Length: 319
Image (cartoon, rainbow, N blue to C red; front, side, top):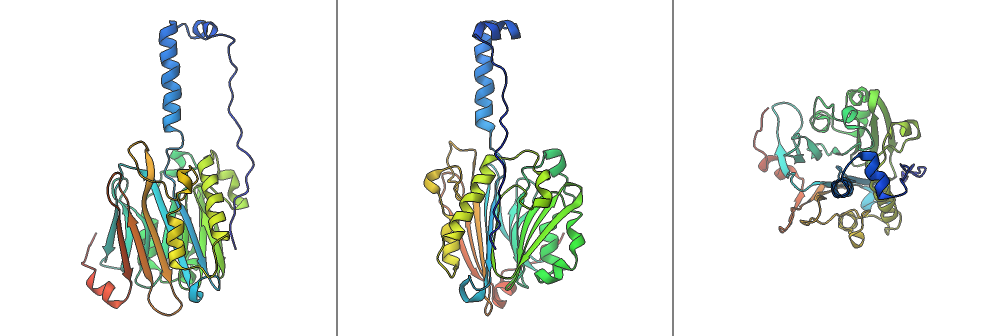
């Protein structure tokens, strides 16, 4: 099951043009030199800021198409270069222990994680929703899911937990099942569940029931969805952790729709982290994490999430 976005082309915003620069000058009552500077500044600002949004790509697969009938779940986290992503091992006073990536500079929330019971959660922001409707989170829902639930089935039984969330997207998975959750404003929720197939997602709504929530679409989100759909549909089967890691490294000739956006001083937004989890039917989950920073060597971590991992990696971190 491959979730593919099919949207109409974006409408284009147009303005009437004056016949000459002198008519513009007359219209705005500005000296020609000041007018040219103002116009240049406006379009330079627009060009530099267009598309600078948090842009994450999510993908997952489960069932016969995955090595040993297991589950794979992955995320590339893209954001502005000044934000720091950290890998943390968390053991609260109550709830399950988990390892996750944290957005340190923004809100301190978990952006992806897996708990000791084998439930993995990744998320993406709903960039097609205006800020005033989207930035209303009152709790870290990803952390709540990780410390409270041990399987997709146990979570779906408590479906109401999503109604209190801010607009966002989640893929949640265990060894045999995965759920794609879209949460729109006004507590509208879509949940799609699969025991075999593929889920992909970027930063806009794809469920027909929630398409109206896409108040302003970003072309980059649609392009990345097309790209990740293509990569997943053309990958040899069965899917393996190394294939998912390769997808996370897709630079697409450094194009705007690539899954990996290489950090550089000339770029404001780039990939800050990659997260890949493989959960076999038998055996322990495997975790791959790559952390990237501009002009610095990247760091790679690989873990087998066995009993030793959960007992030795953790030190209590209480609220």
